[in-house]
Length: 232
Length: 385
Ligand SMILES: Nc1ncnc2c1ncn2[C@@H]1O[C@H](COP(=O)(O)OP(=O)(O)OP(=O)(O)O)[C@@H](O)[C@H]1O
Ligand SMILES: [Mg+2]
Image 1 (cartoon, rainbow over the protein chains, first blue to last red):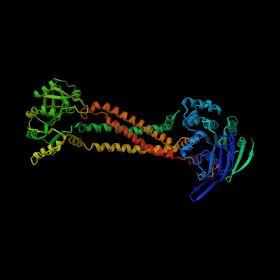
Image 2: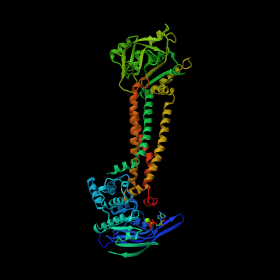
Image 3: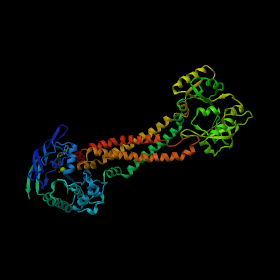
Image 4: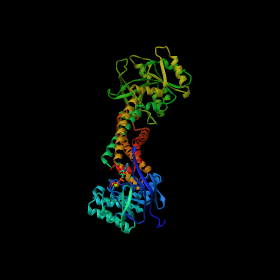
């Protein structure tokens, strides 16, 4: 692996949904490179295919045609099982509605991805603690999600996304459910993860001021990218 | 935290729901345990029957007697090792409520035919030589607090003596035991001669005969020969194996097997449906959570296993509680039931059956939820927010 090689190379990517006789093309022949250490904000109107694209990057949905190449290897043709394994090692997901397990404490939620590693209980505990400290919520480790505010839950979710040290963070509207101040805190944290820990991030957002935190803004419309600015 | 925590948290996601399911399951297994023990106790005679032991009864019905002379004729049949006879005395002690299962038997041959009954040598001698001797089974002796040397009266609610009285005096000169606890020792026996001579009516009749054959393979031949011997006489006989006889005896009380199986079956069918649908709904409720686990990289097979384990836990915990309560009840009731249901206890076979049933129950109720969970597609699950 070299730094010259992009983290992701999307080649001629197409996604079509067929609903009965109708078939809807979400994007067609999409090409895109994502470099190591990038922080990309993807914007675009509702229904333009932002989530669909993110799902391709995260290996939870497969393209209708084209290739998704990650670190030089295709992932679009992997089996479900191989993809699951690949996700557990390489991807951290952050959702709009946090998607924490309601029955587990904050610390247990963060520990979940580590159950897929061979780490010992002690080592897992240490990593969970570190991740919770990074997102500034170590004092709430024992709390259940419903005892936490939206912003706090999103911090826990971010800790869960980074705890296994993935190469890419995928965030779909991570601040869509939060007020301005809290949103800024969360976005600042993502920015910090990008600049200080070198995490590559792809974030989907509707909010232009949220997009400002990214290094690059891409605008997805009618299945094509329109670059809007580059500040790195 | 480990996978076990995750499974436990999943199962107890709604504590009340989990507890209600466990209670339902424990009720099913409670019923299964208690009725299983009852059934086993009723069929104890079938289970302890010796394979080479045949019972000869009047072809009309086993409560109808036959002439004493038959005994002598059966003794001459080839292939027989021992033969003995017995009469139902239908006794009670002091008052009719104190039922005492009592037989008038031929003392020496009876013990030959039932070698599983243990009587110390000096008691055996006293039994054979004492006309008024009553030998009492250990369970019965314990029940009434009788001991060797006691002189007790027993009343019959069937027979009458020539002098009009219906109570016989006995000397307890032997207490018999059995090594195998499923062999009943809840009855008493006395000399046929003493019985026969004192009777006001129906003298020189016997209730039934029991014989042992030289080999199991001779059973049919011996039975046929005996029944043929008395064919076309006023008292035709029917010779069957002891097991078949015990089975018929139990069936006199109604088809207990069928009744118990129906009750147990109905209880299980109901609870299976309740728990099955509840689990399917419970997993549906967790679709998004399961999708999150899959997104994080949990394999479908692992999800299937985890959900199935939840239903196993549910079944085993609920089932073990039910079976435990059933065992406790059976143990508590065993003493009181000793007189008419000897060997009433929780049989190991019922315990094993219960565990097998718990596993089957878990598989049936857990398979569909686990299968559904396994098939959850991440993108679709997140779609239906
Ligand atoms: N499973 C599916 N079957 C059929 N059509 C689908 C499916 N999933 C998404 N679509 C369609 O694909 C298009 C793109 O959806 P997508 O969720 O990617 O949009 P989006 O840009 O994320 O929108 P939003 O900003 O509202 O989240 C939409 O028109 C949607 O209706
Ligand atoms: Mg979307």
